[in-house]
Amino acid sequence: MALGRNGVVAALDVGSSKVSCFIARIDGRGAIRVIGIGHHESKGVRAGAVVDMDAAERAIRAAVDGAEHLAGQTVDSVIVTSAGGHIASHTVGIEVGVTGRQIADYDVNRGLAEARAHIEPGEREVVHAVPIHFSVDDNHGIRDPRGMYATRLGVNLHIVTATTGVVRNLSACVGRGDLAIERQVVAPYAAGLASLVQDELDLGVVLLDMGGGTTSIGVFAGGQLVFADSVPVGGHHITQDIARGLGTPLNYAERMKTLYGSALPSATDDRDVMEIPQVGEDEGAAQVPRSALTGIIQPRVEETLEYVRDKLEASGAARAAGRRVVLVGGASQLQGMREFAGRILNKQVRMGRPIGLSGLAEATAGPAFAACAGVLTYVARTPGEAMALPPEAAANGRLGRWLRANF
Image (cartoon, rainbow, N blue to C red; front, top):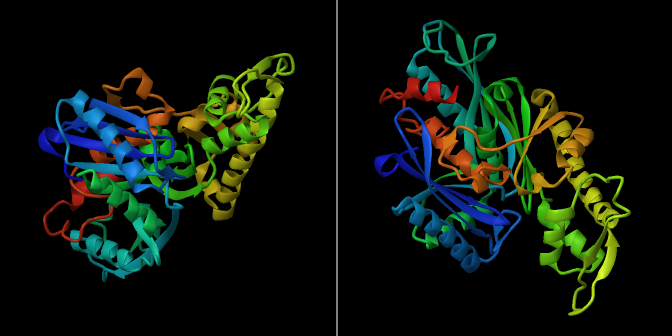
C-alpha cells in the first residue's frame, strides 16, 4: 500500500451507526501516530451497505473534513473498511511443479499467480486474497519456501469476498466526495489487526466486530486471517426492539440501551423503575421496571451470538479459533456482553481496543474505533503492496519483503 505525502495515510470506516476517519503518519519503522480524527453520525447506510448516496456522501465528507482540520492537511485518497456486503470466505489450494531444484522467487510468484487464477468469485467481489501458508512436498505450514529443494510447491490462499453491488456503491459514494479509494479492507480483518496480540494471532482466536447493523466474524490462526463471515444483526436491532417493546421513540430507546441496558439480569432489576416517554405523547411517562428492558435485550443478544456460534461450527473454523474470543465494535460495550458471550460461545472472552498506535484521544481509543485503527495497522504491515502479491513483485525484488510482512 503506497503511503501519501510524508508517510501520511487516511483510514475511513463506513458503518451503520457512525462514519469515522483517522489520518496518521507512519514512519519507516512502521510506527503509527494519529494526527487527525473525525467522526460523524452515519446517514444513508444500512447493514454496512449504502442505501442513500447523498446522505452517505455528506456523512463521509463530514468525518473526513473533521480529521483534515485536526491534522492540518488535506487527503485525496483513503483506505476504506466496512462490514457490509455479506462477507464470506473460502480457501483455494494449488500445487506447482519445481522438478527437484531449489525454490526461487519465480516459483513462489508462479504458485501465487496460479492460485489467483483459480479464484471464482461469481457475482461477488474479491476483497482479499491472503496466503495462509505454503507447502513443500509433504511438509506443510512453511512461511518462506525460497531456497528449499522440492518437487512440488503448494500454496493455500484465503479468499474473502463481498457482494459486488455493495462494494461498488461504497466506492462510488466515496468518489463523489472527491476521494480516491486505494484499497478496501473488511472490518473483522482490520479490527483484528488493531486489537489482537501476537499470541492470539498465532494460537487462534475469534474476533467479533459488533456494529450497528451487522456483527462480523474474523478467525485468526497461525498469524493469518483464516475465516471471515457476518450475520445481519447488530446494535440497531436491539434499539428497535426496545422502541417497539416499550412504545418509546427510537432516540430514547438508544439512550436507555446505553445507560441502563444489560445482556444479563441483576437482582435489583424488578425494583429499579424507569420513566419512559411514550411515542406520540408530549406529557407523562410510563413506569417500567428495568427487568422489562433486560427481557427485551437478552433474546436479541442471544440470537446474535447463536448465529455466530452456528457459523463457526458449520464452517469448521471453531477448531482453528481455539478458546479465545475478542469483542470490539460499539454494540460490544453493552453491559454484560462479555459474560453472556462466554456462556453462549463456551469460550474465554475479553474486550478489545486499538493497540500499537499513538495519538488517539481517550474517546476514540475504545472498541468502537477498532476497525478504523486497524486499517492503519494494515497499511503499516504492508507499506509497499496489497496483501495479494502483485504479479511483478518477483521481478523487481520485493518478494522477500512481502513474505516477511505477511508471515
